[in-house]
Image (tube, rainbow, N blue to C red):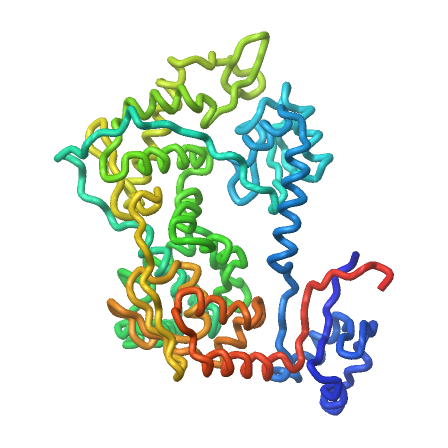
Length: 491
């Protein structure tokens, strides 16, 4: 296989039009069919700037069917593994963050070495180069692996009524996710530049304010010091979802943002929590989430929760290593081994779990009192203990979108705000679809996906909207350059 760039036209007559503008034939490497040609790397450098506005640049990606087929195939491979190999793989998946796991945190590098070798040989994970001891370093998991089976936690004995001394909740993550989605969509177009002091230029801050329908920003307020949008910017930076080009000083969105926001609001919130908790401790998050779900409108006895967690998932944070016939904690070469017993859990893991609970207070997911914790409104929603039905959105024939509170997910808001600017941001938000937004969208998506985003929440999408978007897409895709296309080597 090789990776190439493919130039495609909707109508064969477009070839002659391009030839009249630039010496296209000099840059054609191969002809795939009447409407598709492989072009060399000099095409983008020499000709593409001259064809600006005439060629839509897209990026190759797998279809939803291809992704599903890959997951099904890998699921069959995982099911065929030996039980002890599957156990190591599932532990690796639970400890992994962004598909990367540190071996010493997930398995015993001495006794599980055979399983690790087998998983690597099956291409289910790949060792990454580092200076760690054998089987203790970082491994990249296959991104299409099906999720590991969930731990069947039972925290019913820890559930209790809320107490009067629970602290007041802090601002939760749901609103932050929506604001991050809005700001990210706005940062995508036009390009935003930073000053040498790493602050957004005043001119770009004003433009952002207009697209965000934030009057104080458009009037000249600083983005970084804004109570709402400054927090969203810091959130994107904390998640490494934006990067700064050192040469141009332009901000660029990370391609992984869509994956972080994908799914329902609860799913996006869960990914956010996993990424904000310390990397070594994010494995505790599912247990806290399960406890909040089972508590519902009640609270959780912290001590009983820790005892149940120890009994049901002793290796939640550390795997047990077997040395000289005894179960011990992971250790560095030359260090003394510590017994892996119940007393050690109370001494070590219990403190770490309480540290996670403290972080979740700061995230606005839980409230704490001495020996007790309970979910906030956002926390119960994250735990799927307090979500309700979504109200519909409305799309009018003049391309305006009306979005009531809690009617869309952060992922859907990101897509809608990529398709058009916000006209009003209040209790009910208003947007307007625009051609320029759709053209930017088409660099990574199809027009059918844009229509799907609108129709999934709108009870009746006007035919005029469908026809307008399809007409815009047809015009924009008359000539398309697709980067990163995989073809057979002998093609």
